[in-house]
Length: 83
Image (cartoon, rainbow, N blue to C red; front, side):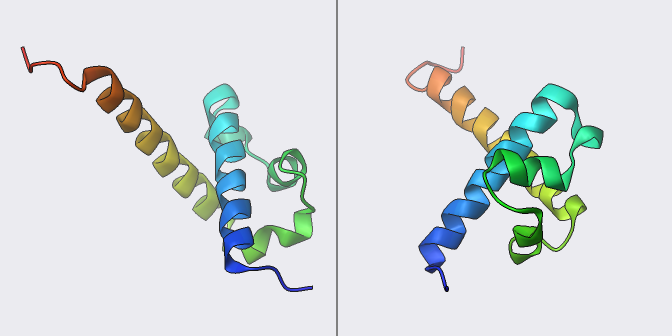
């Protein structure tokens, strides 16, 4: 069964969210592909449809974390003067 591109994007987003949460709570050296996939409700075998390696997952999850931090900072400082 083939899934739509939208489904694949959403699944990848969900994997990155789970990985980012794991990095925050346990550190990047504690990430396991099988654990991330299980927490996202997926099988280990589907991992490589989304990422080329565990290192790629970690790098992209860290980028997601920076994007989320930037969005929170912008939200809290929006409308305030630089002073």
